Length: 328
Image 1: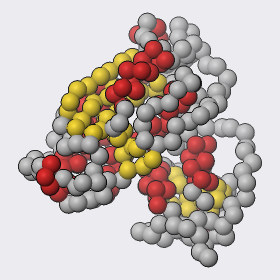
Image 2: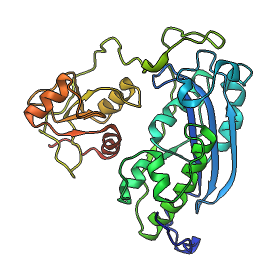
Image 3: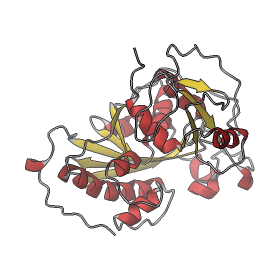
């Protein structure tokens, strides 16, 4: 367990740091772009990471609740819960003017942004901070990037994993010493811009509340989708990604296996950064992104045979923060 000095004061706090944070956790019906939020929690923190208050609500997703064995929220529990538009104003008030903090923040932000888009509104969030990214900036000696590992490092007791309120509490308690450590060492916070969605696409309806499907232990987000024609990358391929160097525009990036963020959204971010999304792995591939590098998929097998660099999704989302411009 790591114990940090809490004597850092506002007088020594870096001037560029935000003045308030909203530590968020949402539980969802799944990981795809048409999945819905079933519960949400927010811990509001001041500039030094002290808890101001907290809020929690169940949300009726108007469909099957998905992996009940993970979040514990059944159709019966959610049937009388408010719809997202009914909590949108209160949720927004908790986020307004604050940096959204979450563990794998891109996922939480995109789920929240899509719910507001469905409600023909937008969440008042301009920046987000991922605690996975912050842990990397601080070089915390964690065995992996799970919330439970971050909590254990700071001696925070997790009581109900995958309960939005408890997960948000745990993250808030772990974020405070992380924030203090960053301030003491004058570490730049890994803040990212949040862009509200102006549209969303739905998939075929799944069973509604009260008509719960039997997913069983084989439940996984459906990662299949029709191929989507993208414009050609305007930059030449500069070659392979090198560890400890930034990605460079024009690099060819391939994806393999399940990702916590919807694959299409992850690919959209890749294209927006000036990178090329590769449908297969070849000697020209700059990087393979996979959360399971030991799997025997054709892409991982080819990556090993070609010596293609491999990174996981969390590392890749951080590399996307700072893509170097193309040569020339």
